[in-house]
Image (cartoon, rainbow, N blue to C red; front, side, top):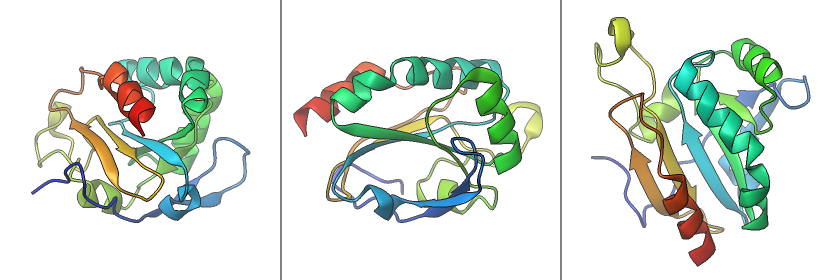
Length: 161
C-alpha cells in the first residue's frame, strides 16, 4: 500500500553533488519547519525528465515565493546527476537513491519489467508535498514516464499550507 495524504513522510538521507560540486548528505530532516516538494524522476539525460527539471528550475521562484523548497530524487549516481545538472543548468538539489531504498519507502519503484526496455529498479515519476511538520499533503505517482506531475495542484497545495 502506498503513501497517502496525512501520512508522515518517510525519513531519508541521500547523497547529492550537483549544487556545490561537493558530495554531501541531504536528509528529509534538513527541511523540518519548511514546506518541501519532493519530485521523483526515472533517469537523468532523458527527454521528459530534462524538460521537467528545467521547467521546475526555471520556475523555482514560484515555489520559493510559496515558502517551499524543491528537491528531486532518482536512482542515478551522484556523478550522472551532477553532469546532467551542469549540462542543463538545473537549480534544485538532485539526490541519488542509487541503492533504491527511498523509492521503495515512497512506493515509486516500477515493478520489474515495468519501465522501458525492461530496465528494473527505476522510479516512476512522482510528486509529494510535505508540510512543515513532515506530513504528506499531496501525492501523485504516475504510471507513464511520459506524463508530468500536476504542477498547478502542487502549487495550490502549497498555497493552502
